[in-house]
Amino acid sequence: MKHIFQKGTDPSKPTFLMLHGTGGNENDLLPIAAHIDSQASVLSVRGNVSENGMPRFFKRLSEGVFDMEDLKMRTEELHEFIGKAAEEHGFDRANVIAIGYSNGANIAANLLFTYADALKGAILHHPMVPNRDTELPDLANVPVFIAAGTNDPICPAQESTDLERLLSDAGASVKLHWENYGHQLTMPEVEAAKEWYDNL
Ligand code: MLT
Image (tube, rainbow, N blue to C red; front, top):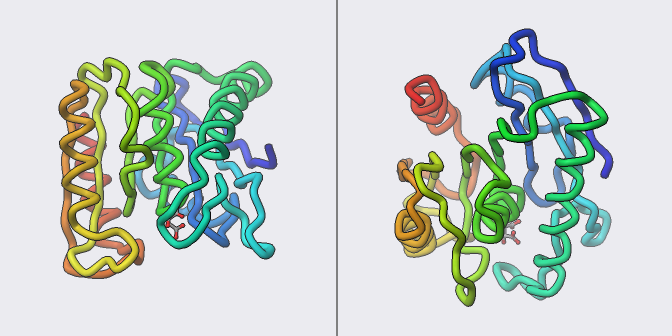
């Protein structure tokens, strides 16, 4: 997959897996990675799907309606890619924290829904429930930060509370953070994510 890798200055720090929103690319979230922890390594990936020229991580049938076959296939593809990238770039595969926004947060959530050990933790900005027809793996103590907007038209509040419940029921340690905005990724929620990360 097309990506940027930046080696961190402290090898004990995690590698941030950066996953952009629809129409974004691997450059978009680099400032956020640097803001959360400037010493961490960064693996920032471009989604392999193109929707009228807009990169995404999996296909959708319409707004908020996912192509579940494609989501499954692309989640496996991303999972495999992280393993290969760890070998190629020499980072610790067991210490990867995903930071995703919107479509990128959705595939990060689906990594959590599919594999017990794909991610050490995750920061999800405006995610939805990726799959309502699956049994989650044991996510005991996996820390997950969810940032949601009370006025998010793409991701209604119920999606966020359902996602929090599903992940918590699987054992994850979930913090759900609300801002009174819409679907945009806001600076206050990035600050809240940083505070959460600093206390891990
Ligand atoms: C998705 O398709 O993943 C969600 O609707 C969010 C987005 O607009 O990308």
